[in-house]
Image (cartoon, rainbow, N blue to C red; front, side):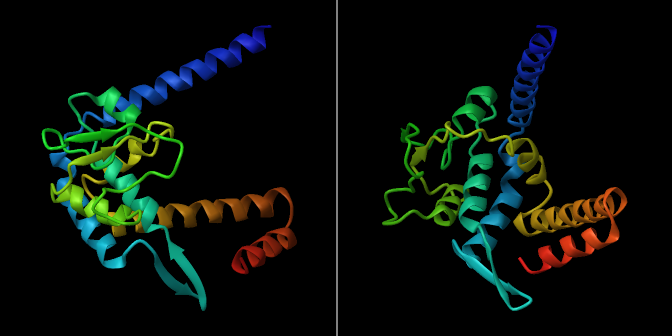
Length: 199
């Protein structure tokens, strides 16, 4: 019984911590994110929704669709209502300009009616240029990434953030390989490394 209460306490504590940190980062004013968000929108607009690059002659696709949606959500936070705004997680929201707010649905998150298909990159570009009147809520999803993305957008654009994430990924990969070598053996580490390289 003690263990059950302990785990319930930990679970509730984590939810409270997550909500508090999300609310704190939602207090950052939109103006602090504007410069780097505009830079990111321009970069993503040049790349379109699907950017494919080749690494070792293998196609690798950047998920500009999702990156644009995440940046749009981060930029659309209304810091005057930080908790509510972070929970409903609107995109395309401009305080004082938004005319229609569509509640969340179970389907794919739509784009502004000016687009015939879903265009998250176009939506982001329109939002940073104050050229949207329709906003869409995305409350079904936990937007915990905002805790990191909003502060990062104060200093870095999307290309710089991707570079930071690549460095973090590389460091974690090295730590993982080291742990496989220490806890299992060198052969397993080499097989794991070759397998990653062939993915």
